[in-house]
Image (cartoon, rainbow, N blue to C red; front, side):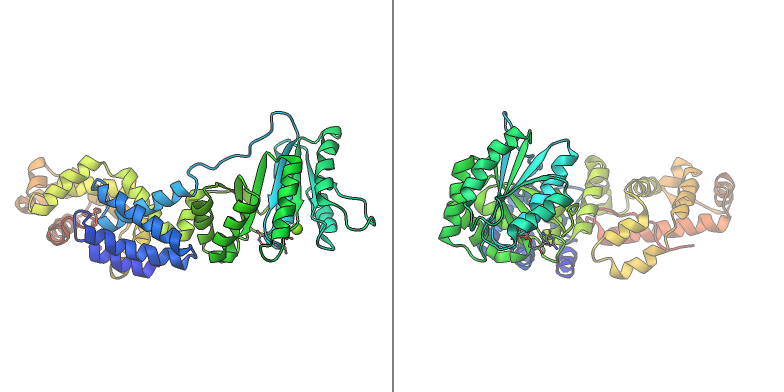
Amino acid sequence: LSDRLTSVFSSLRSKGRLSDADIDATCREIRIALLEADVALPVVRDFVSHVKERARGAEVSQALNPAQQVVKIVNDELVQILGGETRRLRYAKTPPTVIMLAGLQGAGKTTLAGKLARWLREQGHAPMLVAADLQRPNAVQQLQVVGERAQAAVYAPEPGNGVGDPVAVARDSIEQARRRQHDIVIIDTAGRLGIDQELMRQAADIRDAVSPDEVLFVVDAMIGQDAVTTAQAFMDGVGFDGVVLTKLDGDARGGAALSVRHITGRPIMFASTGEKLEDFDAFHPDRMASRILDMGDILTLIEQAQRTFDEQEAAKMAGKLVSGDGFTLDDFLEQMMMVRKMGPLKNLLGMMPGMGQMRDQLNQVDERDLDRVAAIIRSMTPGERQDPKIINGSRRARIARGSGVTVTEVAGLVTRFFDAQKMMKQVAGGMGIPGMPGGRK
Ligand code: GDP
Ligand code: MG
């Protein structure tokens, strides 16, 4: 994606405002990026048309170029759809709070039961795990091992009684929990490799028997496109309140998150990122958005640019730049300081897409160099800053003395300023971060 976006960025960089063509071009790339991230096609269609609508109505930002602006809208929209703020677990007014896990076999329910128990225990709760998966031969034992690791109690049917009734186990567990003062019950249920009616009926029966406060649908992020049908089947068959995405430590791009969220409207609450109990966290929509778009660095850059640029300053500057001649050493200094505020110069440049050829040259820009440039400009009179052409030999000597540099350095700066001014004219209205004093003495 990054390569392709880079080409969109560079083709759009020279324009000042969002046109339909800009939006269409960027949205085409976004569409491909989403499909590559395994977002389901209908979801991609809805999403992209929504973004287009928003982009058309968007005010033109001074700090961002059109492509950046569209990408920012895409990102904002993704974060919003993925849940905005993370939703927390709802606890029952009268304990125990009942959490039921549902999902396909291998989704990571049993592992999640342990992770949740550990996580809740750290917050001062006393969870109890319930083995309501009596389908798989070793399921009960697996939960017992997980419970031991999480140091949580496990409620399971007596061994050797033949195949027990998971609905009865779940029902009885609530009474047990109350008696033993567990404030949270986590019910692990059976899954199948595919969606089947018996599985759904059993899960629905357990749900009816225990009236859970939260039914969590556990889904493997690696299943990609299939997430839509699976989520829909569980939504229809059992219903759920929240989603847990597992196996995010794999290389799945996370499109399943967007699909499930979009199709079911249920929030994604937790993320599972490994086999160990501690590989678990609340779900972060912003992180998932940049994972789906696969361009975290660009987003960081966009955020920094937006935060730092005073919009009016930027507008004023843009006006001057278009004319080119109005660009003075004062502006040069001011811009340099703006750039500095945005963070270490090298990081900034490293984050910018399409900076390939310029990067070598820019890598030579030294932060201390900037300080020296600032000192030189500050030693100039207002007249000299407005019109550096008047800087002759004696003025150069005075400025050099005032700023503690050599006469050659002063002359070098003035030359670089004229170069920058020329360049400004060429890239006027461009990337929004002009005036970078480049090269070295
Ligand atoms: P269940 O059938 O839904 O109960 O799934 P399990 O909890 O038994 O998990 C199935 C397999 O996936 C096991 O080998 C787990 O160790 C593994 N697993 C579960 N969650 C994760 C995860 O977040 N990352 C990775 N890499 N593996 C996981
Ligand atoms: Mg299991």
